[in-house]
Image (tube, rainbow, N blue to C red; front, side):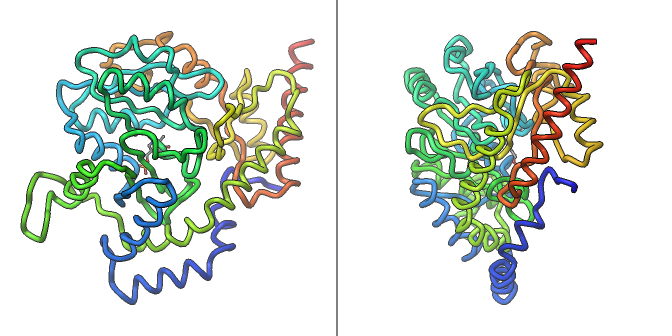
Length: 375
Ligand SMILES: *Cc1c(COP(=O)(O)O)cnc(C)c1O
């Protein structure tokens, strides 16, 4: 039996009637760009995150980039983030003309290490972007503390953390803004591209609304130079339906993570994800670490177990960022993760026999390695 890394069709089959009804309503009303379906999603998503406002946008990358612009960040400024993230986190900083400055992650949670942050702050630093990687929030209390002491803005990259919690507070509600992607494979995924920013800050909220729509206050009244980053009506309608299921899907993911832990705990040479106390991990990605990752990945693929790697090359070793002046060895934890990380199948529709199969095949690979190294 094949186990897919991700199965969007299996999820769709559980909600198809609701989705088709929602799409029909958009088609019937021709509200394709922005409009009532987007506004209704914004209201429910803001409430879900525990924030006053949400702004629906075209993608998570737009949400990061426009948040920085709304804070007035640009050329000559520095913004601090981590090397162990999806490329877009750093890319959005560069798109504003500012310079990404990197700080390594904590070895247990794979999120920004607060102990390393302060030494990276200079007179040019304007903001920090902690990334809630794989669905677990960064250590926000110390990070917020440092940011406030230095007068820095905080952008939570919550693109992988819809519904994750830190001491009872939802992802996106702690920093000045929280940024979300609704790329189809995310825990809350659209049927196309979409993103959002959540915030309590009235000024940033108003600025984001202008920026996403060519700086228009009303039609033909352009207050500033923006862009077109509006959310589609169809995506707004789909996301409103899917938001109603998000908590259930997240707890199903947590259940599957606990199955993996039961089956794989104690396996020699395998590091499982660790949930820090006070944090609610929503397992966007179930990432384990092991030596000899390439061989294990190839063996599992051969046995029809879909796997992936998040992320094989950290930001500072990407060709596009050769100019930042970092080198191999600059960020040892991120580099070790890049070499060892392996993402296993993780979604609400995985059944227990599939999880069992993944675990058994993975353990088989580990045993074969032990035998090989012993002989
Ligand atoms: C997905 C993702 C993004 C980008 O979102 P898009 O909607 O694909 O533009 C940014 N940061 C992180 C951490 C992500 O996982």
